[in-house]
Image (tube, rainbow, N blue to C red; front, side, top):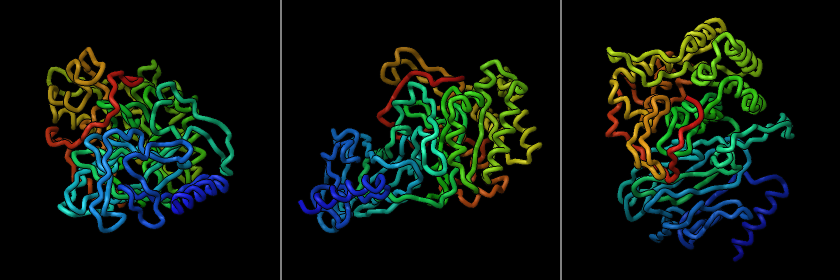
Length: 440
């Protein structure tokens, strides 16, 4: 009782002096490590408390005895989600995963299925500590003093997303996820890579849709670098400005941060040409980023799955990739030519096998999906993962400064030799939807 009371007082005081930014959670049954907050299988999220599980059905608390922190854990036969009310910012999250009397296998994602840890297996009796670094955002635009000066105009579907909800949500997934503890602390020093773009970049919440942006964190060293994905489906450069998404970034961007820019698919579909504001806005963004001491990086849009009679990819993006290449040269900024790399990748897969990288599924493959899905623009997790590897490959091959922050999860990748889709590891999340994202 005394411990519970002390945590309650601490929590109330944290709101009095400013919302709490550091937490120590001990997952398990009844025993709790000193200085930690007990989380058991009945700890359902409560707004008043500010933390807990999204759904407690199927959760199991297991106590093996011994060390209070690592001797017990929480597990489930299905993915489970732990949320914490926390202010916008970058955070290091330390996780103890494993079982002192068994084995475990855990994949960790955050927010909208943002991949952080994949297939972490522990041997019999082993508990491992892993760290991830996460960007948490809200839709309020603040000035340097933290005062509200505007708001991002979210689309109706975005109000259901897990990355605009003033919470950090961690997804624990895989065959035997076993979580002993979660420690959350602010990270004030990591370089932030801000991603801007459309549905091919966005953190997609629903299976089977995915993008390279949500796979990118997996390939960077935590603590040093954090990925902040602000992309959204259906957006053009102009729409990104009109909805104040870029204003949100301008007011957060620090010297040494990165701004990745990938637009083209929807700019083209909107009937625009590269001369109708695209070049002008792109150039303005580059200048603004440089003024703020940040590093702009242009990313050409990847190809669609459109082949000719010779099984070669057809350019369906008009002159948008060329325009971006020209601007990169004119403004002397780094370019990741995902357009070229994706052409190589898809042609190596071939017209039929490339379907395995896109959202091509028979009817009733997912809930409420009476019709077959055949989308040659949007990717499934495998395709998104391969494209993320292409992005990292370009960083490494060009010896860009970010190269030193690429993690050991990245192995030399050759888009002429795609990974075997049958060996791709992606335990599906519980969120599924057959509705196609905005844009094409």
